Length: 101
Image (cartoon, rainbow, N blue to C red):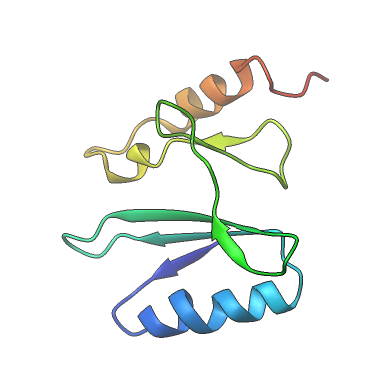
């Protein structure tokens, strides 16, 4: 996971993306919360070694390949006030595809 800042735009969006792909990192999440730029990218490493935007469901949520059962609604990140973390974790845990212990 990388958080973009004014000083790290090129490093996070270009350099690290290439470095992570070259290292075989299967999933790379990139968040840009700078004013007027709220954006979330969920990149997946393809069989050709290139990173591409991963799919989101109809509600805009991204389901992780690396952490089974974990998903994120990027809209949560831009809410004001931020949602309650316990409520979010309960929602994720209640999802039909969440791992059961």
